[in-house]
Length: 139
Ligand SMILES: [Zn+2]
Image (cartoon, rainbow, N blue to C red; front, side, top):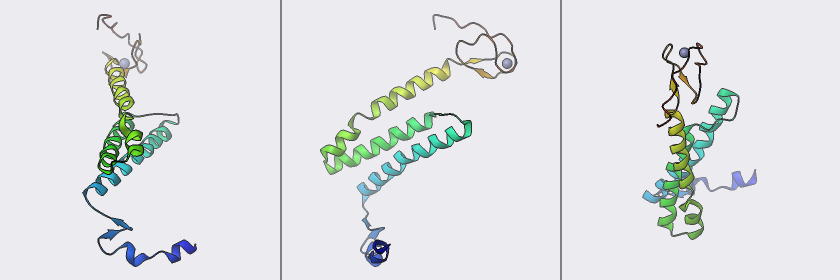
């Protein structure tokens, strides 16, 4: 605990510093990127705990995308090739996962009886058992 008592608390909150950070526009962008990128883990964890199975909600991919672009902006500002390389292409699978997620959601079938959304290629409604209209294979 020496590090805690030896910290210069006064210097951490003076001369434009807050928590030992000298804040300016790009620092806000970078730290916002960090917070957004980290928050995706919390969102995914909560979704998993709620359903008691591993779930990756679309919010996870949106937060990944936003966090990556904010961190990439900061990395470009810093002109740090290691940092830039880490985030330069990471957003591509996030967008692809969002597209796949959206297509899967659109492929769900609405039950004509109870209006529950049923998984794609279902023949019967899982909620009420009503037969579902076969989907046009051309779509
Ligand atoms: Zn139904």
